Length: 150
Image (cartoon, rainbow, N blue to C red):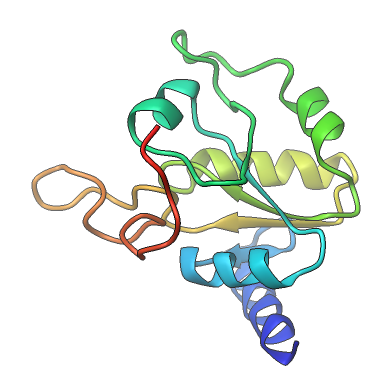
């Protein structure tokens, strides 16, 4: 289990460097390893229903929209849904398209008493490449981690 504590230490160090108010930040590959090895760890995918269905989903992730589809407004039930589905003591890994919504979700969860919140850097699709496309630079899918077409 040393590997797990090493990764969480790395995430914490990264979080301190980035000035994060939650536990830390992990690359997709690191997050997957933590998810597989930390007892009771939960991956929360905060993308929209459209993204899950059209871009792809992560098997066994808890899916809670941060922004509602199709309007794009903040989901007013996010916190209630999170608290209903995910224990406050759980190690929670937040995922979105590129790491921005998940960052905000981690801040909110930490403020509400979740004790171990981590953002997954790069997100599901990663950053845009020179052609303005995602899915080629970084990200969960690009790292070859498990995903299914919606």
